Structure formats: structure tokens, C-alpha cells
Length: 536
Image (cartoon, rainbow, N blue to C red; front, side, top):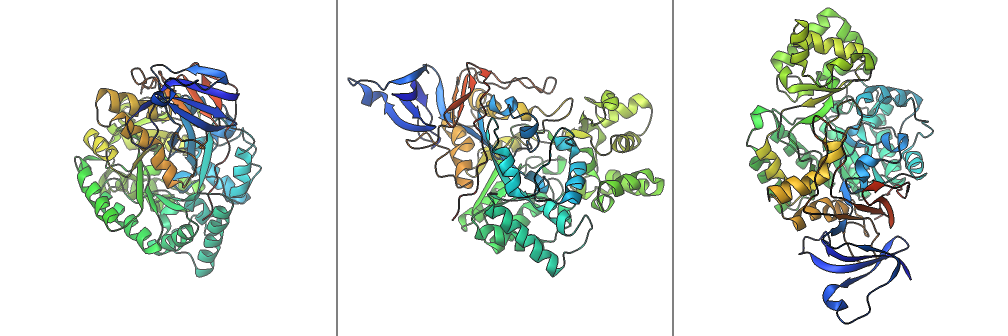
């Protein structure tokens, strides 16, 4: 007898085809047979040591989060209920050009400080790796869901060049190419960049093109957080399309939004740009989250010149009155490159988390609201937070547009990504709610996508981008990374007021054939492992 049969499920198989009713049999972590209702008539139905009655439930492939910031969360808490409860069975880490491999001792400390707001400083983590392969080996000790890794270009640049705003020398570029190649050989699926974050933003296009040539030669893809999502957003998208075409490298656009007032209603222009490139033969995909606010660190808004040299240099500039005045002018008048070329509107910047618990009173208020309570200018409040919290403050940026969100999620190259930051007292609810929100709000309530379309966006499309030959579809022989959900009730529990509430309507989630969610509750199983690049 087999391990498990899921009986009378409405199978939405991830291909985009219509749902069908079937019994699905699982053994040794794989789907071994699918017996459709019509074929089962008059025949003996499959048997197994365990049966699940899936009457009224949809069975789909597990969801793939194409943009996750769980790099330390998976090590800190391998249980990872925030994602497992959503039906996520695979996350892609190493995003936005900054993560924890490859590093040396110096760079590791610098990166830990630079992205404390994303992942915490990591006092509770044993950083016993330095290479990409070492990090993936660490994940293989056991996690709730599977994880793939992108080599972070900013970390590579910090390791080789440092945090200075200058071009890499030929020797430095050669070393960066070698590090990227080594990371891909050790299992990374591609390269990420954060081109509004230091030090990745200091790389010129020629440097990025050379690194992307390496990525393309290994069958990986380039995932840039590009140079602007505000003023100049379309030009920034076009830059990435041209760069990867020159490099011969597939492109995956991270959190592909059109934000700020300058881009209201302009999603069709972005989609037309991408359609022209796709029709010309480009290999392009993108991911989005189904919310309008964004999320990052308060320090990320600073101009690039103020961020040069790393965290200690930033803090020194903020404490110098004359330099702080220049920073304020760039933020409030010119529009800093860290804020996407748009003058900051402090009423849109909500504090979502602080590294120092003593600053907790700021959480849940906009910078302007906190400034008004203190009778001071918003810049003075922001500057105090940056210094006292040692750049560890996270924010929500209320700068998105619903019509853009809906238009982009309909596109043929679209996939889902939470961009979820799990730290902070009041994180963005997308960390806990992205995938059920797609299914509940945008499918059931609004009809922006059909259920079959949406599941394909969240499963087979990302699996194809990751070049995974046996994931992303409900097919015989495929891995049993599966979700059972109720299409009538599936919904996020997380809200902006209560961002850590778990979703409803997802009673079963399997990773490698083992239940990580059973009867709506987290089990103690840790079947997830690293998913490494498939060799060409």
C-alpha cells in the first residue's frame, strides 16, 4: 500500500487548465498516481495507509515565494509557520543584493549591520558558514519549507571592492566573476541586486553585465531590485531589459511595482515595454505582492553618497549637523536616489519595527505623526530614529496604486512573491498573508484572475523560472509539495493592525510528501531542504 491518498480533490494542477476531480496517491515523497473521477468509475479505488477526504477542497502544487527575506528566519525558527501556513513550500532567498554568503569575517559583520532591519542582527544565529554552499548545507539540517538561494551582488561587491562608490578594477571584476561562478556551482539559482541599496548601487552597468554573463552561462537568472521604482521607473526597467539582453541572461524583475504619485496609472506602459521585449525573444519574468504599501528600512531612503563606506560611516554623517543638513535637502527637496528620485513625503512613511525596544513608541505611527507629537520637524524625528536605532528601523511606505497592482498581476510573465520581512513589532502583513490574499481577495472576491490562472502564477511559472523539473505541477512522478485549500473560505488573517495572524481555509500543506500543516495546525515536521540549481 502507498503512504497517502487524497480522495475526491478538485485538482487545480498548476498548468492553467480547468480543474478536475481525482484521487491523488503519494508515496515516498512523490505523486505516484492520479486517478480521475471518470476513470475510477466501476474500478477499485486506490488505497493507502492513510486517506484524506478532500471533498470541497482544491488540491494544487505548493506555492513558490519568488521573493522572500527568510534568510535568518529559517535558521532562527525552522518551524516557519508564517510561510508554511500560507501553503508556501519553496522560498527564494538572497534577495535585493544583500545576504550572508559568500562572505569573509569582515563582510559578514558589515552585512549583518546593514540589514539588521530585514533579518535582525543575528545574535541568536551561529554563523558557521562563509560560502554559498556552506549556507545551503546549513539549511539542509532541516527547515519547514524548501529554499533556493540567489547570490547577492551587493555582498559580493562588499567582499571584493568594499562599500565605496567607485568602479571595480579589472582584477576586482575578475574576482567577482569567480565568486559568482563558485556560488552557482555550489547550487545558487542566480544573482540578485539591490540597485538602490549600498554597495550594490555603486556598480555600473558594464560591471553588472559581466556578472550576468557568468549567470547566463550557468543557466541561472538575474533578479534585480532596479535603480528606481519612482521617478525614472520605466527607464530603470528598460535598463535591466537591455543589460540582460546584452549579457545573454534571463531576467526576473523583483517586486515589479510602479509606485509614488508620478506613476499612478502607468502600469500599462511597463507592461507594453515588457511585451515588446518578450516578443523580441527576451526571457523575462517578474514577481509582485498583492498589496499597495511597500516595506524597507528607514536607512534605505538615504542618498547613496550618504551611505558610502558602510553603516558606521552613515551614522557619522547623520551625527554631523552640516552633513545631516545636506542629507535632509536631498531627501525633502531634491529627491534622493534611495527614495527613488522622489522627495520624501513623511506622512507616507510608517515605522513598522525597531531594533531597540526602547523606541517602540514610534512603531505604528508615520514619521510625521511622531514628529507632530514631539513638536519637531519630521526630519529631526527620522534622524533621531536612524541614529538611536543604529539604522535598524523598518518602515512601510504607503506609495502604491491599486490599479497598477491589478494590471501587473494579470500579465503573462507574473509570479507571486511576498517580499516579506518577518522582523519588527508591526511588519507588513504580506509576510503572513500574500498567498491567501491572492486566492481570496483577487480571485474569489474581485475576479481579477481565475483560480486556475492564479495557481499557475504561484506554482508552475516560478518553477519554470527556477528550472525545477519535478515541481510546480500536480503530475505523476513530481514531488509531493502540495496544498489543500478551501476556495470558499481561503483568506489572509494578517492585517496592518494585526500583521501576524495566520490565514484561514488552508487545512493541509505537504512538503516532500510530509504534512507541515495538518488539520490547520503546524506539525513538528521539518522536511524542507535547499533546492539547488539544476546543471545545464
